[in-house]
Length: 213
Image 1: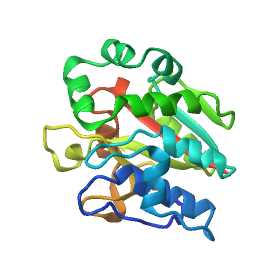
Image 2 (image 1 turned 180 degrees about the vertical axis):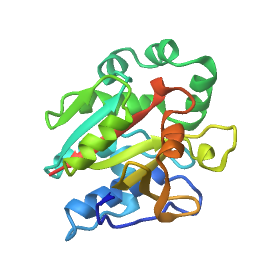
Image 3 (image 1 turned 30 degrees about the vertical axis):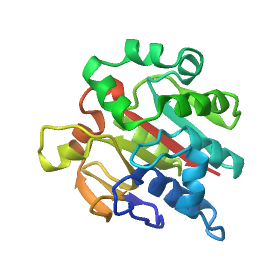
Image 4 (image 1 turned 90 degrees about the vertical axis):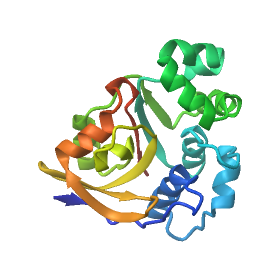
């Protein structure tokens, strides 16, 4: 198994900072001498208490630190920046839109998207990611943050978006830092189980970003 030694940080007790925890892990891996508090990461992501954040604010902040990012997802940030919720309603099923609208501030995310599409060190690939992307990017030394449905890991038929940092890849298994809750550093699952969590509820909603210096 190929592995990366990445610092681990857990989610906050209110279970609202899995994305920020992953941002912090990535930042400390590449910039170990700097400190990145959740207060700082909340500010750059325009976080509101009790809500999720998208990746835009974090990716912009990575770029400002001199890092390079590849973001792979079907979601088109340029169209979202221009059309806002009208684009989301056309892209997503009504059920998925309802879940996201309850948990995210679309106006803040749209304002961040407008900044992100102008950031040259962020490369966008507007298609669903695959496990081949995971293999290739990890093999090239990128730190990969994947969005998964954590309920799939426990065999529960439900949905939530959840960010994890991949720390190891092999033909049979995937190892990742799961910020929680509960926090679980270097959790190893079968490749098939990870793929199910990665591509659920629909492979069109799969997404990952990969970071290098």
